[in-house]
Length: 153
Image (cartoon, rainbow, N blue to C red):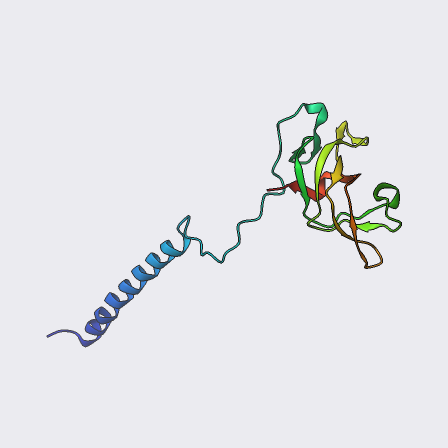
């Protein structure tokens, strides 16, 4: 005669094993590389991506990042303001995320012998000013710290 308690336990073991196997298979499908859902955005670019295609003297270097003349960049975090003397606009402009430019080279302000400020030519774009107005400006040049920029896609 069979033990009723043992019979109940064995009746639970098989469904539990099947459930665990199904869960593991589901995780493999969900987390398998390349199984991204179409609605998922592309991963954010690495802000520490670096450009190595120029002479050392032409690089703008900050921590693990390096930028060379001709690199297309985008501001990825708030970077302060651009002064009227640089932009030609009578009010300071807000340098917020999304601003785009081309690196011209290092700006004259090396720290420990390494230039951390990039001289850039801003693209023609709309800018917010510190009064909350939006102004459309043509290209102009200014500088920006390398901590606030990344290579554009």
